[in-house]
Image (tube, rainbow over all chains, first blue to last red; front, top):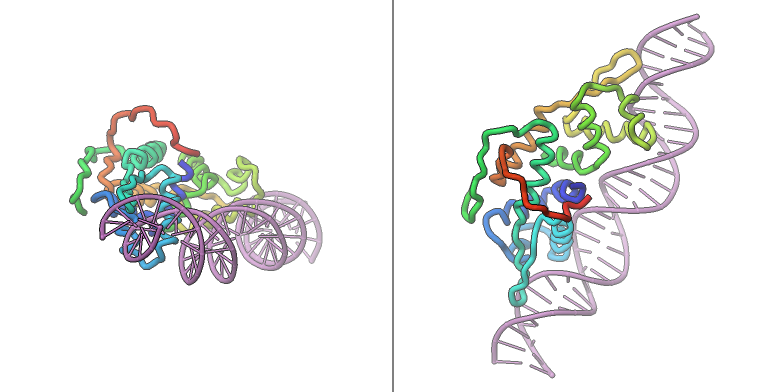
Length: 101
Length: 101
DNA sequence: CTTAAACTTAGATGTTTAGCTAAATATAGA
DNA sequence: TCTATATTTAGCTAAACATCTAAGTTTAAG
């Protein structure tokens, strides 16, 4: 849980997760959307991987990252429930590609 | 939201919030429960205050800290909803080891 | 006014983090 | 194998963080 919150503490990483919510993307595709170098993005991916928030699959020369929603879910839910917040009425939404907000 | 996650990224600070969930406590009372120095705890309080997660009231020589639950609630809920994670009722997940620490 | 108690601020230090450029590695395809 | 592309690793600097001890601030009480 510690590493999850640490990963979440950086806005770039949160944005990456947000992008991956829509669909899996390659490291390159993700990197394009941020004004930082690829090595820097690579380091961010490593942090997210370390927190088990994303999963990688190699396809050719690309590495496709995918959100592990259940891990994020578990961490956040157990925390919110600890505080008695989020009790509620939000039903489990299907998070498929294209769902926007 | 940035500062909230940053505050939450430290286990000591999360524990402080957890303690304050029960009742308001003085800085000294809180500090007693951690194996770090008072100045260090004071710094943690400052981070939590900066994130607007706690509120302080001076009573005599003591400073009483109090959890601002609504702020935590807002931040966490808006984030979970962003991801379509219902903070409500997700059935117990299958054993998933590696939820880090 | 002096002392004591409760906290915080200041200053120092070791560790971690984010960022960069440049080089290395891996894979696909000719 | 050679070349081009995708991504990571290496090596570095600068800033941020957690922690400590020591000193400063504020308030209460004698």
